[in-house]
Image (tube, rainbow, N blue to C red; front, side, top):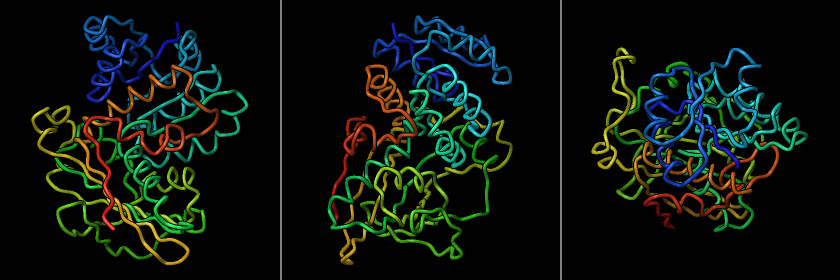
Length: 328
């Protein structure tokens, strides 16, 4: 039987993903560095569990010996994506994660040829904003002739999980990047963008998101800019280790996410679309578990792939209460 391993299974998002994978009937192996929380979750999900760190290749290889797909839910991904991507290629295991960090995607690009040679797929961003924005962009570009530029923004609402806050703090960068002519280049201007998520225009600040890579690969559009609008206390301050594991279900239900995109065609005409969905911490485990189920079922392509490119532009709309509408 093909097995799915979830590394970081006992974390905030990992545990929700594990429960959903169990509910979907997937053959599940829970993994991580600490036995106690894994043991408790394994009893709850009737799954086996394996304890190992990522500083010993032999231990990783042994743990992956009978696994078909690994889903990495352990951030910061700057520490975990490299060892697990390399191990996946060595062991013929498809790799998925839920990273929102640029480094993971740049690494997947570098390892693309090795992964293809090994018949292994690398699918970072199998849940979360990369799935949301990728599917929204893929939808919108069909509305213009010869799309040349994509400007896309994410509305982040509510609080951030402890793990996400730690990952964000370790990946702070002052370098603002855009995609221009198909290449990542530094953007000198920090001017805000204006997007309408469905309740009127709001100012969005420019940020460097991994979607500069994934949307570029999936669509072939040469020029891409990414923005974020924040409401609530999405970016906490103070001692991060003192934060709760993540938002409660009531907090998630009260804070939906949106995304908005503007596409310009070669003739100068524009088209816009908006995505409205559940909170990111609800969407991510659902999308990641569904992506893993599909890959276990044989839906994969070797090398570096993106969720929208692999599963199609409608993938996000199969997750929870997600809708895309056109606004011009």
